[in-house]
Image (cartoon, rainbow over all chains, first blue to last red; front, side, top):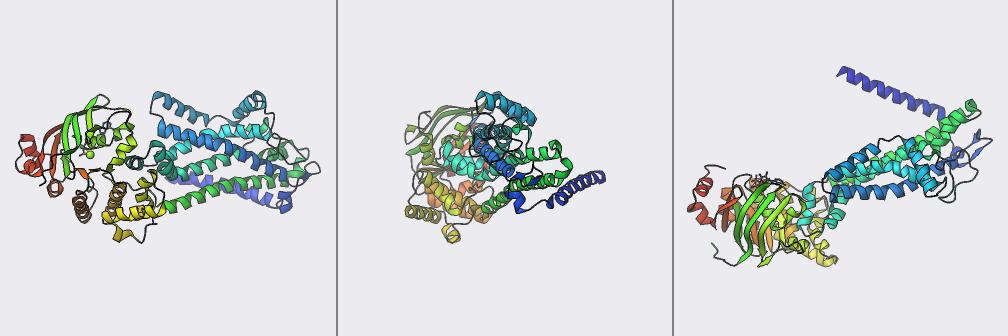
Length: 272
Length: 255
Ligand SMILES: Nc1ncnc2c1ncn2[C@@H]1O[C@H](COP(=O)(O)OP(=O)(O)OP(=O)(O)O)[C@@H](O)[C@H]1O
Ligand SMILES: [Mg+2]
């Protein structure tokens, strides 16, 4: 008991220290200019606008792809598929996919989207790759949310003459929606912070212009951070900028998590 | 006691298996219209299973196999090609545990009407009010129709479920131990309600409460281990049972 508490405390202190470190070192670099201008002078000065925009775009593409497919799969598995060895196998496969290292998704993305579909290194290829990475997570959380809807509500709807789809559409889904949305947002927030899957599929080291279509390459916060902290020719000099970038990335991820949190709270209030 | 003989529902030699296990072993029963028929019997004898066959809720369970027939107004409802949603609209159900949807009171009662294509706001309001009045709930909830149904008490929730079921004007109302989760006052209200609904519907109720069966039911059927042992007017079953098993059960010697 004591030991467990001590461990918890150590973990908390560690995380607290990390946040404090990033915050104190990064806060100095933060300004509207940092957020709203492009890097200058070989990325030793200026802001990170292209990386912010790139991350937002690529996350949107990920969402457009992964959320509908993920939710549809979850609905199929939980509401239509009978519990056979086949569906159990699919479930196990999906759970395992969620544990596949992201760099593997990156390589897969190159093979399938960049080369196979001929999308080239682009926002679209990266978004789809991140979508693949997020898909198992959205399916799993979606299924969980659907499972939590009591069977008696489904039966109640059916007993009134609802078709299977009507019962899903008008009773099950609204009830599961908070869980589905929260799961999707958390999955997306994880995707937004990934570097490996976009590494070979579309992210660029430095671009002078913002992407104008899904076929363009793009900059992204996690990759920018990686460059600034390991690949830059003047690493010491750009340290504050790297920390600032980390802070913005954290902020973006935190924003997604917070919206998940508030959505959940709001739905709770509406339903209970 | 009523002397209705025209049957609304007719169950003919119904067998039901869950997997390899035979749960209903050839049930035959006439259920008259505009009367209350009670199903009684010890726990696990198949009362709920029988009730759920009557509106084809077993369709969802791939393990369930039905043999025999069930007729509604003389027409089979078990044929695969028969529109099951139409059958369920004509044969409504109230469950043991109140199961209102996590929606507003109004939306709960309006649900069945909406999925049946009624979207006209004014008509919808009328029908919802009518159903709530019939369930003796209107006085209590008319100024909180837009509040969540889950904020109602258990007894109110059950009456809401009854309102929801009768709003679509079914012909048969199935009730599976509708009062078992409720206090005596709520139970009394629901029994009162059943007696009134009897004038318009054919009602089948499962109950463990012998007094309740005697208070509300016109006819009573006693089931035991998947068989229908005896069926008759409530007075016959409770005062002059023909079978030894029935006699033991209604006198409280087992169950
Ligand atoms: N979905 C199912 N799959 C397999 N067996 C089932 C299923 N539902 C019920 N049974 C079995 O069928 C038998 C009858 O159950 P049922 O619920 O109809 O009994 P009951 O008479 O309603 O009992 P109670 O009075 O306790 O509600 C029980 O032995 C039960 O275990
Ligand atoms: Mg039962």
